[in-house]
Image (cartoon, rainbow over all chains, first blue to last red; front, side):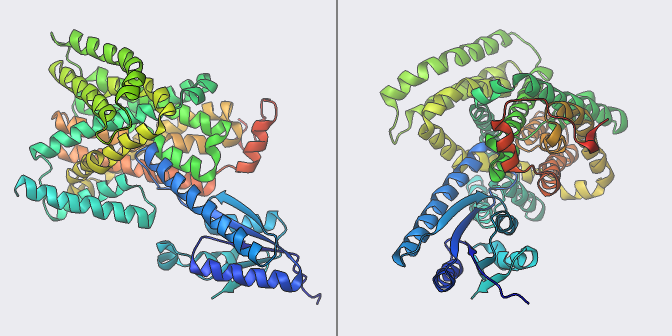
Length: 143
Length: 391
């Protein structure tokens, strides 16, 4: 068996406590193994079956603002520890985007919080569950 | 129940719908409609209280105006030919088929059949827009084509609703004159009015729009017509003004979504009889088919010609419906053209058409956004049909 060499870690961020812990863990791991780190924010669902374009635009704007702030905070956190981090913001369904992004960008470890802050995570099972099922690479779920 | 008691109960339902919308990520309109169904069927709330009928009618005109104002004229011009072709076919196919099915197979009256044709021929720009923005496709050529085609279908629906049921009388010339005058004058007056009176808490610019819409409703009513077409066109001619004054448009939306449109969708739901729906599941399936079959069979060949790689996705999104379908059905009910059972069936089909084709398009036919963006950046060349889609 050849030992794992982690060179590029992916940490999904959504502003939740779980994602913050995952970021903390991912930064520590990168310091340890000298890997690069990408923080990915997935701008989730817009109101399904909307009756007006205005309703969609408003939620989209709110999400844009929210996730830009989350990514700025993520960069600042990495900066405090003297590390560089690349960030990306992509619309779509979280688990699907995270697994596709990891594969397309050659990430070799996904570090993810065990539960986000959306009601769906509590009712339908967490994004972390789905990522562990579908990822092409190892996944570390942080509690 | 006293009017004020009904208002209090409905206000509580509106708050609940808003909270559920935020928590579940489902449109507030759909939840208002659904909670209206529950309130009507479980608690027996009266949907025909005068104030509720009035607010809901006005809300439908405001919604129509907003739908017109949300169109981007530049995007529409970019793929005019293809959008008109797909949009018109998307309207005409289900209009004819659903109308014939209602008249020939279900034995509905000619006017009720026309309402069925109109309600089931619609698309939903908002449902489509949410899917496109969520996937980032709204900025691509295929996304713009679909949105423009939706606009054409909406326009045709508004035209049908206004033209089919009009009974020209002595007031008709006045209705026409007021409509044309407002459509010509409002975009010219609006910039000056906004500079002079805009940006105030008392919102004179929103009041100006409301007085125009009320004027349209008054003359339409006198002419035994419907203000939906002039309201839609008025919104359309104001779209450039709103592009320059986004805040003004947002304030109008706030007023509409906070107070007006909830009562429109709630009233729609209150009028749905679950008993009638469950007792007529076969008819429901038939009407759903009368919308979906012509949409799919007529749009798909056109979509294959204009957007060969995304023909299925385009076709499914053009098969959605919600706001205009509900407006058409409620118009038919208010005018006594359709009864509560027919209304319940039509609204249920409209809601199903918002959900089913959208879910299928997102699950199985969603295009690759990155590929689309790269394709848009390349010089336009005619793309070959994929192997599976060649005739």
